[in-house]
Length: 504
Image (cartoon, rainbow, N blue to C red):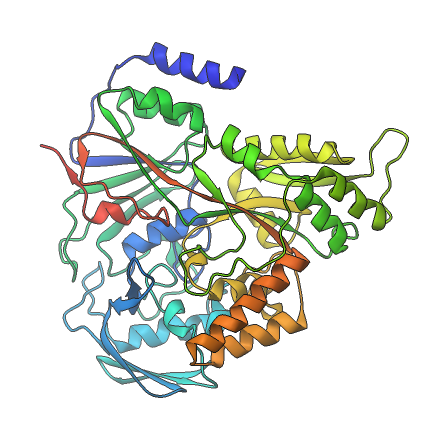
């Protein structure tokens, strides 16, 4: 409460003062630097969002998660193990080079062969070879049927890079997307500008500066003063009531698909016991957190998939707030309270993002009620994310952004084959039955049978709880009114910049 009042007071004192601005540049406030702008490597939210502006995949996905043409104008599948893409002609990279089939082959093979160490490499494990039949025809020969391949070749999941791009490509990425890279200063900013030669409609915005502002109050002040133009899903809920009163600012709010989750390292002696993980789930009062911290701008989650997805299933084990059940599970696990009421200590790592730290503080209070002492450790984002990807944690919380809109997320995040650096199974969870179900879904062309497989996968994950699905957070954009035609996406992507305009 005191923090909320302090934030409101600071914003009120700031008034409506503004600072001179470059009229052609949109200042987009982000909490942290992208970890790696090579689309073959970067998997953090900032990297994927900015890469989506710089690069194109072979296909794209519409609002209903159906595939549409991108760099490939069309594609054929003569049999379950062959996929043929027909590329657009006249597409050029930002440096003027023509984009051809050889670039597609290099992009995929550089990951498959280890020329570039990529956590996305395992997404192409089904590929036996990639062939440039001619400059505008690419043929994927598969070892077995793979229903996930189109997803993993889509914009946002991957971007096609020029042939020869190596491990230092992230320093000056070159794509075919609507914006082109200008510069990056780690922990300061990333600057991009419109690509006038874009094969799609060129953006109307001339330049965007992604300014890194890790402190939420400072971020709010930047918007208040007019030195920042837009922020998305990064401001504390306390700020919205004040910012909404400013005549030069506008709020856009839509239901989101971004999901907040709490992950466990199941190799840890304490967390290897499923009863301990289930107890933690029962000790978390999600409804209270949604109302108090998120001001109702979220919905409880039962699955990684959005509820509107064809493969979503709500027929899973549930862990409503029930401290008595949590204590019973901990007793059954042999983790009884000591004289001081503490059963054991756990450490939760967080970034220095204000929202994540507040969530961790609340979880600390709630777990203490059932005898779990949660020790919090906050790090600069790059250090925190490095620890997460290397499995150096007991617990952490992050959001899946965009990637959870396709059922391949279950494979990427929980398959035994996807331990880092081959994927996102950072907690090293392994379940042979889950692996078999996901393999069957990947190879089966029958949608109804795949739906059954995914329903079972969601039941297994809800029972074993390698991670707790907390809530789907609304997408909330705060922007200066000089930025018009802002249409947020449920995934919280930055693609609205492709159609937004600056008022004269």
